[in-house]
Image (cartoon, rainbow, N blue to C red; front, side):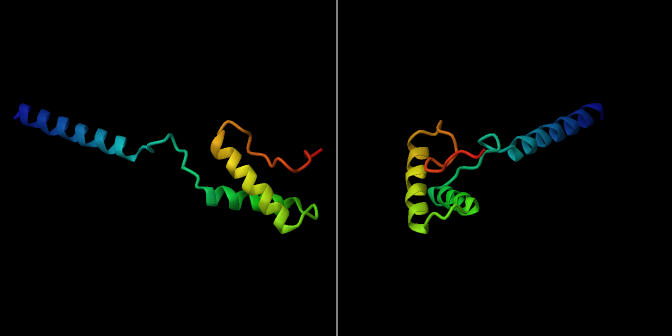
Length: 86
């Protein structure tokens, strides 16, 4: 009887451990960002600045920014054509 209880407890621990591992995110919590989402975020940042930049200029700046971020992920996530906030 004691062996049966040990087997049941061990089986339960194995399944609980497997469930815990399955619930953890694969990439440490970071979700992959698509070009489209990066572009939308950039456009929202530029629109929030509301510095009188035309939509076409914002679009070109964001295209350059997304391209730069995809080619060099270490680049900061700040717009390149905007003056720094003081």
